[in-house]
Length: 515
Image (cartoon, rainbow, N blue to C red; front, side):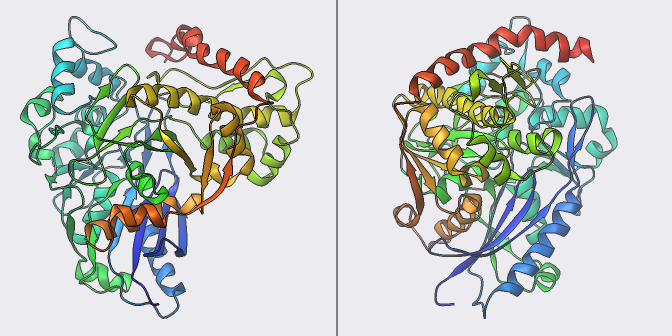
């Protein structure tokens, strides 16, 4: 092998993907191991961390075995889900299942943390002013974040909470198992809103917001700069994996960061849209800002002193997975999208709202649910499938409009990535509904592997951001169709009204009094 290569670990909600990535961005070989998610009737969502680790180790060994006379690994990059919580003991072993980013069992306590006698959108004015001034964002009153998770563990899993040496994010858990070091960065801890994220602020937890969040400082991991080298491999881990002990491990970062990196959207206002399990719209920006009404914020970015827009749709590509697994169980994704192509744009007037698990941005409401609207006796199977694809794209347009208002300008060169971007039809639907040119990222399902490798290369001093931007490959470009514009404009105008129109109904059906 004539060029450096990196081992990239992507701990996604659906499972762990591991890849060997050449410095030019080519994924030389990748392996995936799925992970089970346990859902409970009271809003719980958990995963077994030991299943993560077993899958990660097995995948690494398979990747290394598949390489043709590999040279020495230049470093390890880690990415994955964020806003989730693992309680670990002093020995680095998890004391309870990971509480995932969509788990909102902490809501009763989160509402007390963020609220007060007077509340605006769930926040006491005096509290939100402090959070925004220092951290640039705030915990969600709905409890689906590490603040809510900490409260849930404290009140409902008191033994695990009492024994915990630290409450950490999944990417930091992987780093801990590799190196033996319990540490986090402002980027990996952003879902907790416990750091001073103002330009020039020293790296560390801020006592004011730690107190506001009612977090135990003794249970927070050591904080080091984003992009730091966490350490090298533990001897027993190195032996098990078949890698040198000297292999450097760079601190993990959220998949939001590595998506931007892997897509080459690293310049200020360079936009990307991810359609993975969840979905988001993001871009690097040169400022710290927050919009708590729509749950947007600019968070610590790709390097120290930079920022990245953060937001999230709770359901993205998983809407199509739900349709495949729960409704139309007789075909794979390729079959479904081929059938969707037979339906006319607009799906015969059917609108799908993709809020299968509530929503976070641009409306924060854990009670919202998905629905097919305007179904008639003339509606076909193809209409229903296409409506799901269009519903995810309507949601993306809605979030893009709010994100560009937040950014103060249009985003440049929208790049589409994630599993959803493997479908040319879905890419074209996004271009048509958004009304903008869409660039399909090459090898879109491996963008986070490429991004994790490049993030490691950047912070090991092997590449610059300009070099990364120049190396990021795109596949096809999709132009919006003028012919479909009137149809999609009509349906979209109804779509954006639906969350508000249905909110009280879903609160009655799914709110606390309904449980």
